[in-house]
Length: 314
Image (tube, rainbow, N blue to C red):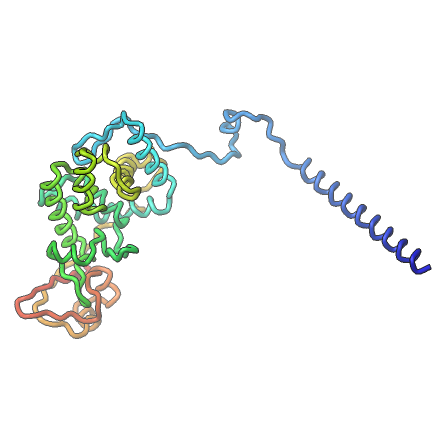
């Protein structure tokens, strides 16, 4: 009797499950039938459908130069490297928009310094490739707009200590970068290899040139980061010069304005930078914003030293 009882219960459960599944299946079918059917299976018609989200490959220019030196776009491998960086940069919308905004603030400063030091204008795009024109720190502990390692920064005349880090000063770090580029150009005889050496180091470039018996960046085999490096700068250059063609529609109001400030020359120690800021009509936050090279809450000035501090205009 108990056996029959359990059999009947099992049968009822099974029938119930079948009914539930059938109801669910009918509901799903009804929902599917309610969806609008796509009338075509061709890519052309899908592209014409206003409801389709569309992504297009970035246009690769036929002719490209870096620092007045021709990029051999007839080389398929070179073409593909630029194609990659144009698509990566073009579709990394948030980062590229920020770069374009910041370029309006910092490119005039960089351009002036490059010109004064005899370095081609295209090197400003290396700063964009290095840091996005921001004061950042890399995994290898390179700092600032131009991503100097501490030893290299000091070699090229920048002060780096607990209170002052001139890698965070756009004007001074750009002068130091120019010194490096001119040294590299004197060593390699072309600006493109000088640029590549800023990523790989002069020793690595010299080793590659000697071993491979080539003197063109575009004919040399490098590790991936260096292989992509100059092309990242070229992608920024191309998009910067043709923003709307690559889908970036920024108005003048969208861009970050150059900083407006007066300067104060400091020849004695400042024990309290917050008080110094208040005494000069600003606050500690603004003082740090305009002078990111100030890395502490005080500034020690030794005999014979002088620092120039920017004070935001009221």
